[in-house]
Image (cartoon, rainbow, N blue to C red; front, side, top):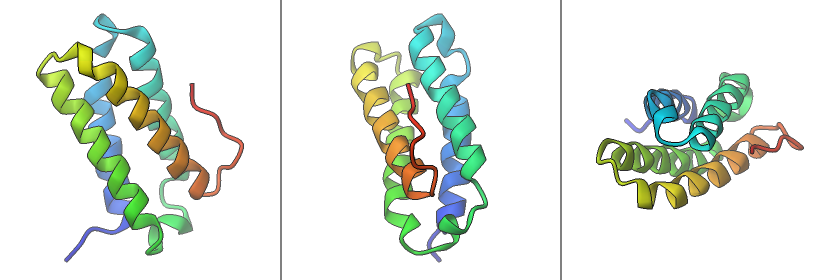
Length: 107
């Protein structure tokens, strides 16, 4: 059985928390972005959007991007990390807007 949008969001939140853990030592801005993503995802978590099929593709994309950022962090690939964090922020922004929080801007 495939994951629901909510299950993928939960996994993405957990991944982002793992990314943020200890990231401050490398880059304050990255950590701030990831922490902000977690906060916004927790706000939209359990909303109706994540119980619908349209939530699945965009949530899956964000989940994959979060997994990539975590891989880069674990590999200490700081050169690739900057672009990956920016991509994750963009995906998170899209996901949050689709979930109904229009006008929320991540930094």
